[in-house]
Image 1 (cartoon, rainbow, N blue to C red):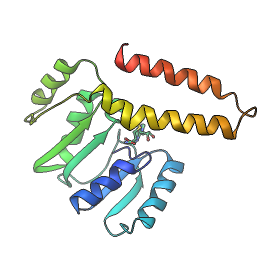
Image 2: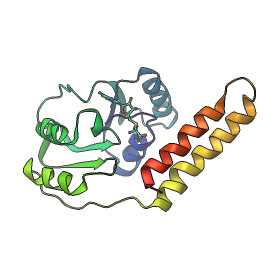
Image 3: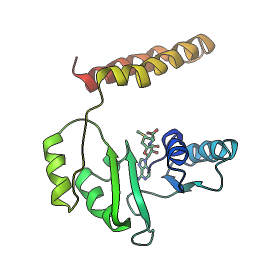
Length: 170
Ligand SMILES: C[S@@+](CC[C@H](N)C(=O)[O-])C[C@H]1O[C@@H](n2cnc3c(N)ncnc32)[C@H](O)[C@@H]1O
């Protein structure tokens, strides 16, 4: 859900060998995602769909798994849990990767909304560095070299540094 770049959705399609629908409202991102689906030979099992996660109109009990990767913030944690429940098949699973904060409150909301909590964990600082900030830093350096003097990338870089501070309260 909220496929964005499509990377997590494609990985899920590969790992599960099931059918996967990646939804988002960012059409340019969905176009890239659709191209990636075609390139990866997964067109028979993966689909990019322009649809808002705020008003989805899938039939009830459509999905075995709803996977929200960095997107439930758009509807709100508790509201998302409540609204999306009807799209799950009985015994289906919901996986949510959300920003840190109000963790105990969110865990309570999970059972309050009628789900059984199977587990939860925090991503380590190291994981964020290796998987997110280090590649991002490389891309920024590459862009700074390529567009030197054309776009004031120093501003972008400054924002990234601030964001890191927010995430980890350093
Ligand atoms: C933080 S990104 C996560 C993207 C992707 N899940 C990933 O992990 O790479 C958030 C995504 O949510 C999408 N989004 C925001 N509001 C949305 C909405 N109402 N319906 C569907 N997607 C939405 C954005 O377009 C963006 O692609």
